[in-house]
Image (cartoon, rainbow, N blue to C red; front, side, top):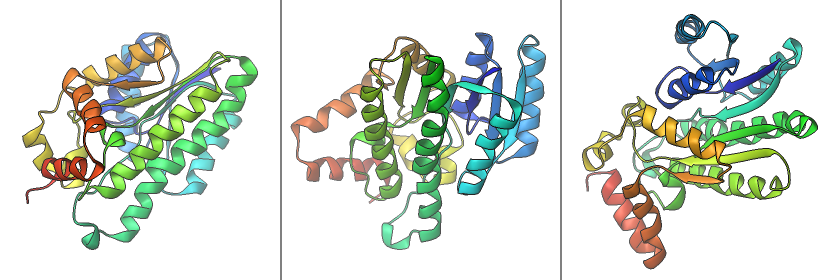
Length: 257
């Protein structure tokens, strides 16, 4: 059975993307850490789209054994993951000297290691069947330094560089990889990251708008998609200034000085 795996599916962008894939008739495998929210979303989407199959698998992606368990589950069920959405991720905004080092390690596992692992293990069947898409969620943070948000910015830079590299390798196949790079959008991300200040500087847009744009660009075969005209300017402008100046401007957007 062909199926779309979405990590971080229970809220925000993951939930919005799940609805878009379901609307197009794709079977879904929803993944997240909160089993109650997963069950509720599974029931909601199954009711709304009765012709597709909606499955769920709880996993904490900070743990490599649980990542492996997700892959094993798809193998046991006979699923062909022809669409992969690496959406799970989180941030932490504070001075680096005050950051919880274990939390930073967990962030790297979720934001980077899980993207690499799932992209690699599911790519084999995509290439074998000569079809498939991978949507990795980056950020406008992928393009600039991020003082006070340093680990998060670094992980999203990794996601962008990784995605562009693999997309180039796949250019002669029918497997497409998009790195979606939104700015702030409505979700619980900034509250968890302790970074509500950024939302005062840049007004978040609806997660549904980000999902719709990313889904459209994925279908077009784009490799990178920056959401919104203002965000495109934010990404383009640092080409004309020093990295030091870009870091200073970024810092002013991330934390009150």
